[in-house]
Image 1 (tube, rainbow, N blue to C red):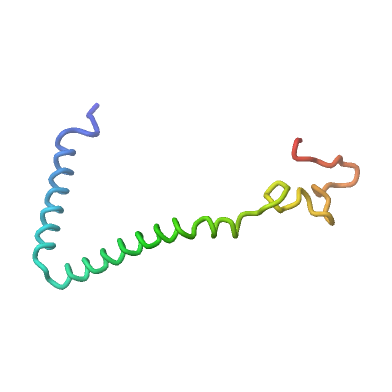
Image 2 (image 1 turned 45 degrees about the vertical axis):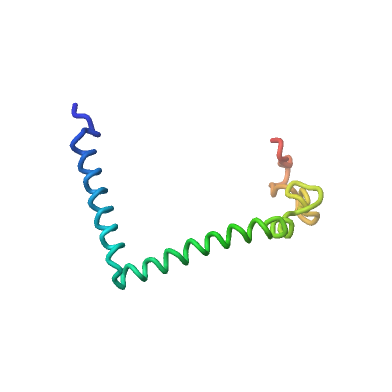
Length: 101
């Protein structure tokens, strides 16, 4: 039985990654329009992620407190059962089921 991760397969993957990286570096140094657009978009993405991170550090607790259900019950302020509905719908003569059944 042949080993699925043999040396030739791994060397092909390593060569393709190395060639991709060398082409990427060559394009990066070339300063053509594609690279300039890519650099602008990459900078915008990184800036946006950093801004989201800092905004969440500052306002995260406030947002979390706005949507956190406070009070007693199974999900915070949610009552265990609705007052106008039975716990489980059942046919006449069946015993009502509870969460423990």
